[in-house]
Amino acid sequence: GGSLEIYDRLGQLIKERGLLADLELEHEKEGIGIKKSGCHGFCEMGPLVRIEPENYLYLKVGIEDCEDIVEKTLMRDEPVERLMFSADNHIYKAQEDIPFYHKQTRMVLKNCGSINAESFTEYVAKGGYEALRKALLEMEPMEVCQSIIDSNLRGRGGGGYPAGRKWSQVLKQNSEVKYVVCNGDEGDPGAFMDRSIMEGDPHGIIEGMIIAGYATKSTAGYIYVRAEYPLAVERLRIAIGSARKHGILGKNILNSGFSFDININKGAGAFVCGEGSALTASIEGERGMPRVKPPRTVEQGLWAKPTVLNNVETFANVPLIIKNGSDWYKGFGTENSPGTKAFAITGNVNNTGLIEVPMGTALKEVIFDIGGGIKNGKKFKAVQIGGPSGGCLTEEHLDLPLDFDSLKKVGAMIGSGGLVVMDEDTCMVEVARFFMNFTQNESCGKCVPCREGTKRMLEILENIVNGKGTLEDLDLLEELSDTISNTALCGLGKSAASPVVSTLKYFRNEYIEHVVDKK
Ligand code: SF4
Image (cartoon, rainbow, N blue to C red; front, side, top):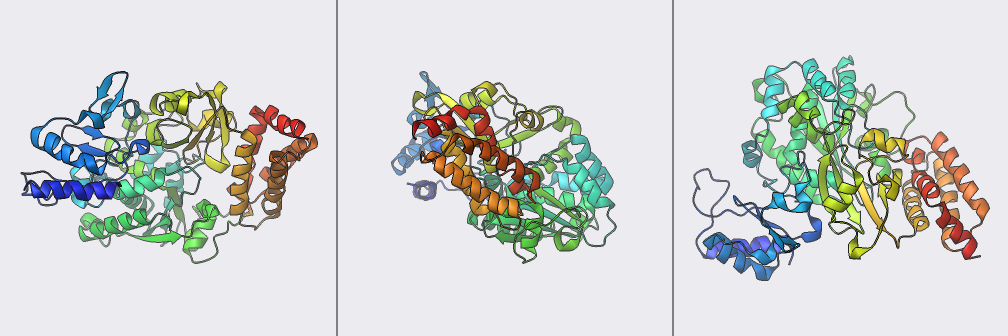
């Protein structure tokens, strides 16, 4: 059964025994509560059930296990060991001890999988909206911007541009109307970090956005979410509704004199809409196409007004920084990339899932310690990082620290944080073809280099994969990569060739084998 069936079954069994408590009612101190949470991250092992306060984590729970969970654990306080993670003759009872979680530092994902994402009370009980209170009642807008500048929080959506610098640029703009936009248009194949945060801790994003609104003297916020994420939309809607009800959104928030509200916009799942100017065009009801810059979004963004545009994970970091201070925040990660980063690990790895580690964590720790190594005892070959705009890393990069600058040096990028792990059997030319096919499909067609160039590159890659390529094709691929990245209008085109460039760099032999062998 799926998680929802298990939720229903556990609820039914607890109720039958007269033990059910209503967690939303303050006076219900007795009994057992059951709640739906967001993603715990350990997707490979789902459905997951977490028992509190013991912190037991039950894995791969089936309908048939529910009886035991209730009888043994809930009524007699005994763990159901067969549902616990075990390795090397050791049973890991507490969630924190399981190797998958042990090496993680879950800050942004802290509430995901532990609170009921639909409950305002639970978010507040975990210290939620304390940062907002502090910002609105104790700090001036410039101080809030300065705090984010000092923390050196860099945009988690791809480029790593310092968020505080963006905010202070918007604050300086002389305009009555300004906007805060949250980019929840996660489109990379294999990436689901933002989705999990929206589904698992929607108030964290809302709190970050209101703080950004106050810091930049903005009037309204928009969250742009893919329509393919209906649960994220629903949870955000519920969270916005309860925030309004509790005076957290709307007029005169917390009696501070600051007014701000947030709307949700559903995107139709076009990858290019993750690009700032295409995203704002889409919210305005126009076709989601990028435009030439300048003007930049901080000067003329949504409806040509100054706009702060950050992604989901960036906003989710904001309350942590304001509440605990920028020095605290800089205690995590590296000097130039402070804090943590959420990654989605997929592909040929044992523990696929959603993880969060301090910036600067070595690639091998992520793949082997947290990810549990390569499936079926195979050898590691490469990992595609940053999705279709990113590049691949190989065995020689296993010691590489995952942070913005280290990755840039080797021609890759963190991007939004997708990690697709590949084993020795993977054909790297096919990988390049797969990503080029994706990008080509998503090209909006506005500019020639991207529209025509990606088509041509895809044709060549298809030929090579089908054994019809020539050695000259490899030079042509390189030439086209160069031209497209130098002349395309937006980030999608500029980075479209990255998977080809990096696979050609590290696995040129494979391309040559395809060309020579199959002729
Ligand atoms: Fe559109 Fe590609 Fe040009 Fe971007 S680079 S504007 S996606 S055609």
